[in-house]
Length: 299
Image (tube, rainbow, N blue to C red):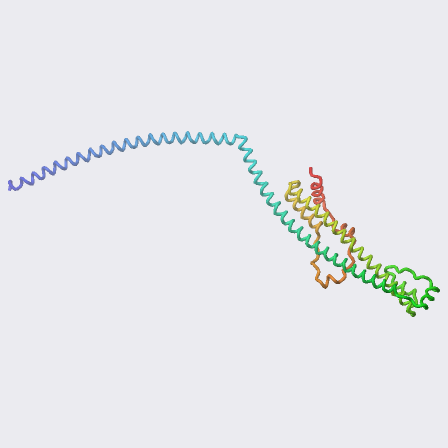
């Protein structure tokens, strides 16, 4: 028994020795780890203290730089200029949009005026043709050869009174319509009155057309000068655009649609005199007058 237990005792002794060695090794390793941890923590604390000190220095430098920027007059002027330019850009964009609308409105009014002018031209040409036709009829009637009986009657009869436009019936009743000569004279008087009436109507239409042309050209020049003055910034954006729009309404009033062929051939009612039309249209208010004064005499 004793001889059999000897190997186990050696094993137990070696195990105990190995266990003691491992315990010593673990203690040594634990001491080494504790020292390394302490050194790492100490170095980390020193590093963080240095980082915190540098961060404070950078914050102080940043604060001083911001203060210097706030105290810099040039930077303040640049910021104010940037804000002003942004506001001006927005105002100019709105003004340009308003001017584009006014340009579209002016173009539409110009087309309406051109249509009216073409209609007046057609009326004038129709009046000229009618006048020529009546003059030809009157010339043909006056060139007829009278008979000896008509010469005798004309010798004993007083000369006929000249027919005045609007007095056709009175002139015709002064002749004896029972004879061919009397009827011929009555026809001549009536045709002469028609010619004079159509001549007066053609002259009136021609005068209206010329007045409308001159008025349209003057108003287009005035509108263009006002628009240029508004674009140069002679007036404020909103008030100038509103006054310019009202000026466009006054200068280019709404016109009727272009007449068809049938309505173009039909006679129109008597036109309003240009002076009365101008007095009825140009009812300018204070804002438009102020805008026109600023555009014509800029400060």
